[in-house]
Amino acid sequence: QTRAPLLAADMDERCYQCAPADQQAPEFLRGGEAVVLHHLHPSGRITFTLPKLDLGFETRFFDGSQELHANRHLHTVILEPDVAALPRVSLVWHSALPCHFKVHKLERTVITHKSDRSLGQAPADEAELVLA
Image 1 (tube, helix red, strand yellow):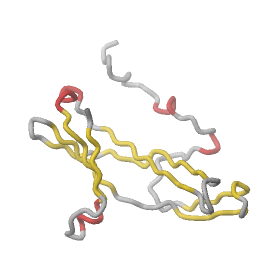
Image 2 (tube, one colour):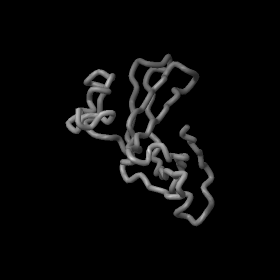
Image 3 (cartoon, one colour):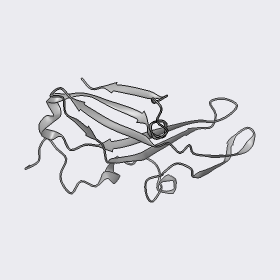
Image 4 (cartoon, one colour):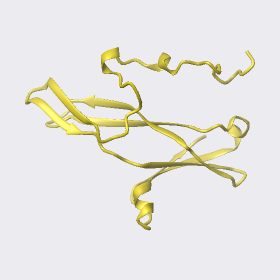
C-alpha cells in the first residue's frame, strides 16, 4: 500500500518464472554456457554454446540527463529446436533503473554492444528502443 503503483519491497521475482523447476538456472546466466539438447531435433543431439555479449543500457531523459543501467542480466533463453535445420536461440536481457519520479521524462533507452566501444570503434550493432 505504501509503494503503489510500484511492486512491494519484498516482491519475490520467482512469481514471474514459468519454466519448470528442472529448466531453471540457480542464478542469472552470463553467456558462454554449454547447451545440450537431447531428443528435441530429428538429428538427435545438438550441442552449442550460448553467445556471450556485453551489452550497455543507457536511458536518456527529456531534461537532457542520462543514466547507465548497472543491473543488467541475461534473464531468459528461449530454445526453439524445431524451427529449421539448426535450433533458433533467443536471448532476453533484463535491466532495471530506479527512475520512478522521472518516469514521465523518459525519452529512450539505447542498447549497445560494449565490446565495440572498448575497441575505440563506433558501435556496429546499436539498437534504440523508444519508450512512449
